[in-house]
Image (cartoon, rainbow, N blue to C red; front, side):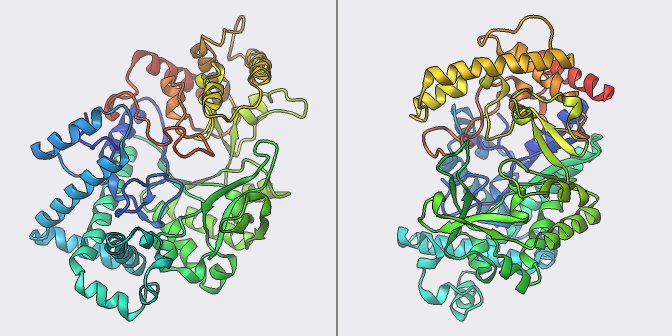
Length: 513
């Protein structure tokens, strides 16, 4: 038990960073920690936030007194994370801390300085959180701010100002919770660097936001109002994808001097040594469709790529940070080259590194300016893929059309991968059976670690040998997305003998590189 209420907080992140640094890691990539909805604690998908210019306060440290431990213990023992219960408990605890600290003049002075430094974007988020709770308590129809009374839809209107005066304490609380979260994230990055990491945390910048959230309410002129984003139909997703999110408007960004975009970069890099840009093709174009329409009814909307790349490069230079772009999927012509010219690294995921004939590309031929990865949070773990556990999930969820064909294709892919890993020197001997995935996992990690890429990012699930993946795209309740708990304490998660041996192997291959 960590005393984190079963969710994981920035204190645990600091502990894990120290453990990873002891094992030789120089960076720690994390999922988005963007703000969610305090009034709706059951919403927790990290890539569907309320705002990308505020933090998820559920990860703020809430202390370790006996009363909190009694509340936290049963939540931590549950087989899966109960976000609603854990979030509700943590928010109550944050309010207790707020009440306790209001009489601490030193703390309040530091809070006031933070609030002044963060300015209008923080105030808008805190106001939204108070308003959202106020209206949602009255009726579920008020979940989306566009359903609020008209006078409250304007974040700068007289009605909102009057509400803030009448509910100043609630607004103060939400700003204070941001203060605690910011402190925690700063301490985690400090712990990572102090432990010897050259980069430390690599933050994750989600591609979009929930249109009902604080960033959309606070910056409506900069948003794609009435549109959602996704991906066009392709071989992997014949129906395309509608993510149910909105994003910044290219015209709105230009008209407002790219303020919201630069705010996002500033917050993301404030306490990190790098940032990963989710669906980086959005710097060039986004697939958009009217709200409620299917993904096959969309069109590409172009963005001011040159300006956005220059802003990313500028902020990376200011913060001395690395930038990794998720450049997977249908790419605009020449886009990867332009990323490289801007000093931005792409991603090279083992599953996708193949030639036109389907053979796996030798890792020595992977590009230097990229992050090599065995898998991602949206794909099966290596152990899950080798054992076909992901196909079992697809069958159970009714997402599989031909089980026999999928099994036959998977066997062919295993053979292709094993042959490629033997050729790279990462594997020896006969191919292991599907029931022995850890042998293949170790070979896959060695294969990827031996790539020519300057950066290696290993998902913790692969480091631990898990068969379960964190997220299956296209599912909501069918699979426990973002609810799985890692098997152990953050401070010692990597200390099991088999894990330590796996990481020593990684260091050996990286030193050879």
